[in-house]
Length: 140
Image (cartoon, rainbow, N blue to C red; front, side, top):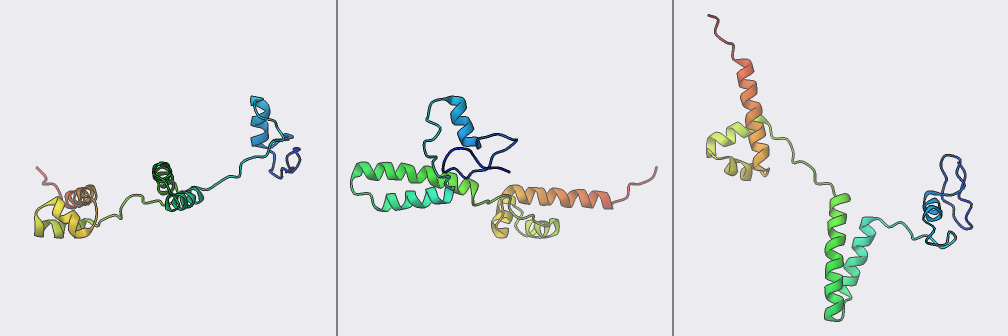
């Protein structure tokens, strides 16, 4: 693997090209000089931390409103990419059925188990399928 032919660029090239991806795009667009310095790649976490610092250092109302909007957007990007919340833990069918029998409500069951109502519904549906699979049908 070779490096880009632009001075001071140590990025790798692909497929026998002379330039890295960023410089190849610049050549294709023809808008920015090829040798102009590239912006450093920033992670969403770095952007979020910079936005927090700008928010804390805001002196005027105008700066505060700009920093507030920037912090909101940076927070959305950071928590959408870096912190993967994902699906809640799978609730076992037996536990869900036991708690549901006590409360008689999906919402109350979800609150007690600290999961979503949809997770409780899925667990109860799994339990019903298991029960139906275990029951033998009567022969005529």
